[in-house]
Amino acid sequence: MKIIVTDTPDQAFQRAADMIAEEIRGSQAPVLGLATGRTMESIYRILVQQHDAGTLDFSGTTSFNLDEYVGLLPTDPNSYSHYMQEHLFSHVNIPAGQGHVPDGSAVDLDAECARYEAAIRAAGGLGLQLLGIGETGHIGFNEPPSAFDSRTRVVHLDDVTRRQNSGMFGDDPERVPERALTMGVGTILEARHLLLVAVGDGKAAIVDEALNGPISEGVSATAIRLHDDVTVILDAAAARIWRQNGHLPNSTENL
Image (cartoon, rainbow, N blue to C red; front, side, top):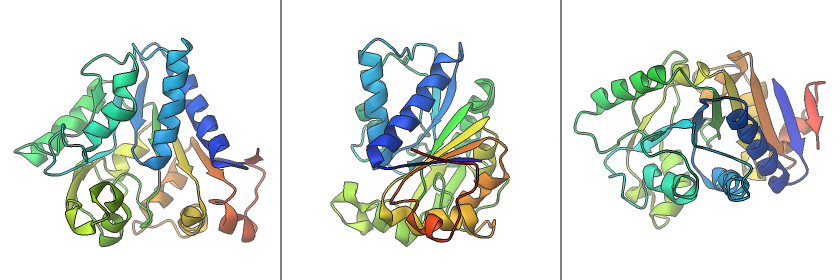
């Protein structure tokens, strides 16, 4: 595991965007695993800027998002499908139909999960998987407990997660859907490279638990330590508790 600690959030966003851009440039047919959230908005903004500058071509890229709320149409402003259109897909030349998001409005959700897994396999598997980390320690929507061999499935969202995500729902946790579709931990771990990005003091405690606590299905982010190619990018605030506890191994790069 390589851990990069930057002085500022903007440096963390830039470093993550550069890694994703390198993945795209380094393959004729890159397959990205993508995520959502405020941190990702800043990363996508940099990627769009690189595309606008003519230095980044998405025409050969296929992507698969981690998750989607159950019950929301892709056109719903609060859906992750809409989020991806707003922040990335509509601004770059990724071909129509190659930016995949689970369909939370599907009539048969189990069939949709199976279809999504099959689509990932048909694309050759995930190359680089971008991850955030939630307050419950989840990656994707893999709420505690989530088996480390779990696949794309329907999950019930923790009340903590619904509260954390309520900003896009008028700050009303009750409006946040109770269920979601998510790639499983096992699906995520099959990606060739994992890139987890976290910024801000609010993430400091869960980052320390993910990187140093017991590896447990109760904190799905701890599963990344079972993967043999992981990069974690933190700003100084997100790394605060981890540093206070003396976790500064040789694998850490400070920027």
